[in-house]
Image 1 (spheres, one colour):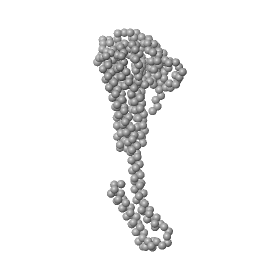
Image 2 (cartoon, one colour; image 1 turned 45 degrees about the vertical axis):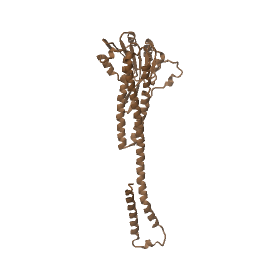
Image 3 (cartoon, rainbow, N blue to C red; image 1 turned 90 degrees about the vertical axis):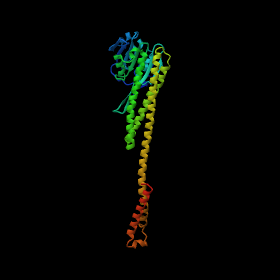
Image 4 (tube, helix red, strand yellow; image 1 turned 180 degrees about the vertical axis):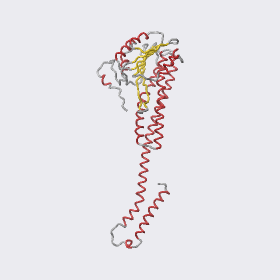
Length: 355
């Protein structure tokens, strides 16, 4: 599992706040969409020039600006400059290997970094994308690495005026986006859970070496998932504790709810990690047991042939005076002794349930 998020060493020696994209370029051209709404009005459009976003900064409506593609430093700089975002925040937006975090920028804005995670069933690998959220008094700006997200239900609720989202402020919209990402984690965990259960069944019935590679692969994926999800608890807790005028008291209860969901996700991740560790131990035990069974069979065969070899060794000696050698029935007697010894040991082993 190789995830190349770019080399941060390229920024070595540059001054803090220097805008340089660090990560994989996932789109050729930056795409910007704007959704502007209040309880009675709604506007949605895709803009061609970044300056078209500027009139939405100081309005009585709520504006959601979504940017797909964070590789264009000119676009990020213009947008951040007009909305008074600190250069270090813009630098973090363009560095797509950030861990989930939250920064309170005072009365201006709140900055949140999260990971949007999905599961590629064909490759059996988790795919990850950085999402940066900035929300102020009347706007929310989301920065994604590429088009395609889990926010379509939110867009539909805004378009159709369903629920309370059109009646609430930008803090509620930011909560809704965070909640959508966390809910998507549950869908991912369901897929991983089904895959782990399938591996567990195969492990019990037929522990092949291919299963070992799949278990190791899933363990690496769970480590990556844990690194992406575990800090999210601190992010939500920070939003709850933030004494910011940008987060209304009516939104606190919703943040507590998404915090509970985050804890459930973390618990599920830890459970899956424990299950995979147990499956690895089960596989190694199965291999060891199979080896023990093989050694047991070989030991029984060797034990049966010990007295037969003993008899063959005695009568294979080249002494001249051995009475049995001249006896007419000596050969048949020795063969009978060998057969009797072998059958006797087989019967004994069966009574002891060693075979």
